[in-house]
Image (cartoon, rainbow, N blue to C red; front, side):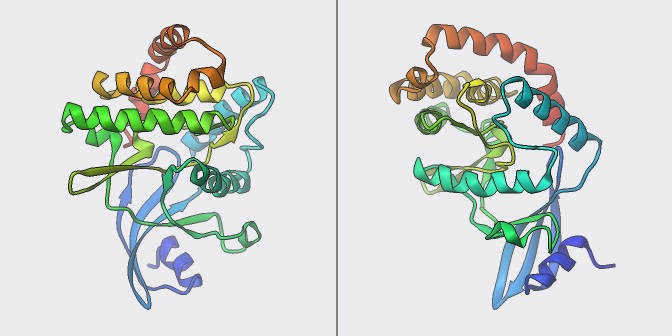
Amino acid sequence: MQTAEAAFLGELGYSQVKVLRYLPSFTRRVSLCSAKKKKMKYLVVKYHEYNLRRIVTDSVICGLSIAIFRPIKAYASVTERIRGEMIARDVLKKVSIRTSTLIYPKRMDQLPRLGYFIVEKHIESVPLSQFALSAEPKVMRSIGYSMGVKTASLHKLQYAFGDNRASNTLIEQRGKEYTFYKIDHEYFCWDPSNVFQMLDIIMLTQYPGIPDSFVNRFFKGYSDAEGYAALKVKPEYFERATHLFGNLLSIPLHFIKQFE
């Protein structure tokens, strides 16, 4: 029986489509596929389908968004989530944050004619949540500082990742060089009230398994890049708030990590 991924990629002109494996995702069906168009490629296909976790997540995000004057647009709409992923790539490029190459959709008028799919080029990488388990402290310090600087650059534009978990950051290694990529931008948003910017850092630095070697250098990079000034808070206040809200988020974050 033909899979939904094979049928969809066939519409895009690919042949010999094979689902190699399904990738961890809390709310979507995400698969790694091989497919041929002139030559064989490895693609990540994300399919937006409604399930209980999707409905609960959207309800929480929509409620929070409304409470702070709706910086996230209409997240009950799948189209708006996909639009957010497309906008995110343009904004992140401005602050030199890498993202996976988007293959489909290229334009919003392509939706929903072919369905609610996103297709990206596969990156040979490891999620930060997994990478942190075995990486040397000096490597984690280097990555943490770089991510702190880049995150501050994004926040100064009043944008937020929205779902800045360690599993949504990929680490690519080439020799002794490490590069991070951001993925899953469906909650990417413009937020002049700075609530989602704070949640960005709380969700990343308080994520289960993230070591202090990373966290301390992340805050250093964020401070050096004047991120605190952009949020109009003092570092001491923010770090206390991070630990406070991190404790409140510890249970749901541990629950979500089971699906990674």
